[in-house]
Image 1 (cartoon, helix red, strand yellow):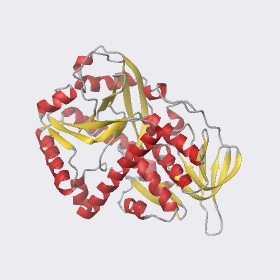
Image 2 (cartoon, rainbow, N blue to C red):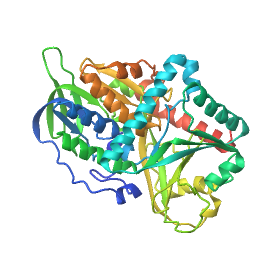
Image 3 (cartoon, rainbow, N blue to C red):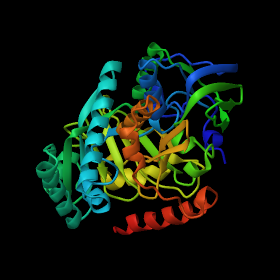
Image 4 (cartoon, rainbow, N blue to C red):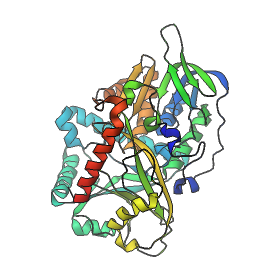
Length: 435
């Protein structure tokens, strides 16, 4: 199944609140015929846009193609949270790789936040500070407090504020959780506007962007022959290729596909709440909980609650996304019973077995990054810059990420779908039972 077209109309953004409130950006034409470039970038989400932008600013001739639209995939549909650290916490990283590697990965993630904030500011896209983490039981609350102290003493990061049950309830406007914390160094953003802002910066730097251009095959070059990117409407002859399709990349590279698995997630937005329910997120932070199938939410500038949650065991979106997500929303905010949902949409992200991103060199002149596992707004933006640096011969950052092992899913890309069905059903059951 081609997820590029399985759930969405060709060339159209999903019916999301983000699409309805996006900044204006003219549609880019499809590629026609043959063109040449120093670098071809496949996928116009955060990874590809950042790679193209940084390559162009370094003087490279760059072509960026997307089968749909700029920011069409997870980059334009997500919860908008710019989190700290990697997808796995530093204590996990320390156990797996040692303190030195964990510290380096933390520092790179801080660079990712700073880069994302800088590009947002340059694009005129505001970022609101603060992301709360809501824990479901006492053990999780104690671990959260321990990690806040650990980050402060070992990593010099003192921006995480532990919260007991009542303090978190006052912060969220919900008594559904046992406590948690708020990270004042994290933030949240209109994700599609961030992608469109990066596209405007890339064009200003000289990037040629083509939408509606589906890549079917990549023929990697050699020391004496250039690479060929074969699209439905033309081809690109180039020296380097960057794979940045993430959950929508399909099987352009079999080894990447075996390690990066697409999954769907769903979001709703309420009508503007106005002066009603002032207890909900009074400080306008974002929030997420500790479920395996995470609930995450925030208010936008019109006080619409944007809430993500729920899982399905099929790559097809359900017919009524609102009906799927609403019970999760009401479990956190029962006072919103009867409040109208104005938007409901789904999207495809990608995960890895370890939940750490997968960086790879599929060929001598090809780089790939993806599998951000729900933690991609900042890390994907950094991944693009690291790939641009690697093309220029400065590969230290890229190689550090590529050294983190990401195992293939059992059965590889061909059998991962039935395993996804079984796994999501099992973890969804555990969430519902409170484990």
